[in-house]
Length: 116
Image 1 (spheres, rainbow, N blue to C red):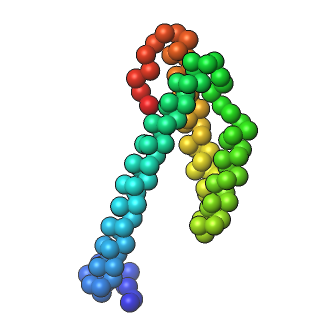
Image 2: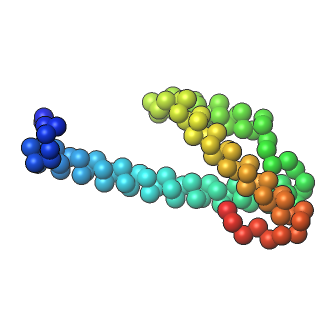
Image 3: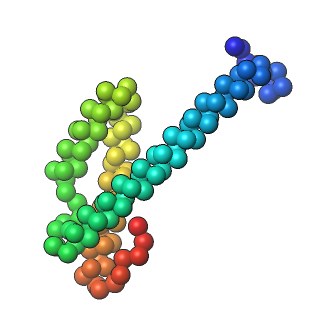
């Protein structure tokens, strides 16, 4: 299948069908990723409340390092760029720590924690 860069009217209809099929799969995967992240953040919120109640620090650098090492290995096994996986996890960890800090502040100040 070849495509022309002169406009979509010159593209073989089979190419459009294949693009649609692949994009539908991507959309489904994106939805699953969002739902999995939501579940992950529900768990990390519970961790944040537990840490706050027991006056534990919001960050756990040793665990974070283990998680990064683990995720890099998973990425390599899945043929995903380990550097990308590490950047992704670092972003998530940063958000989790930010949430844990807010939960800790709310616990100290007696404010209810409403947002994720």
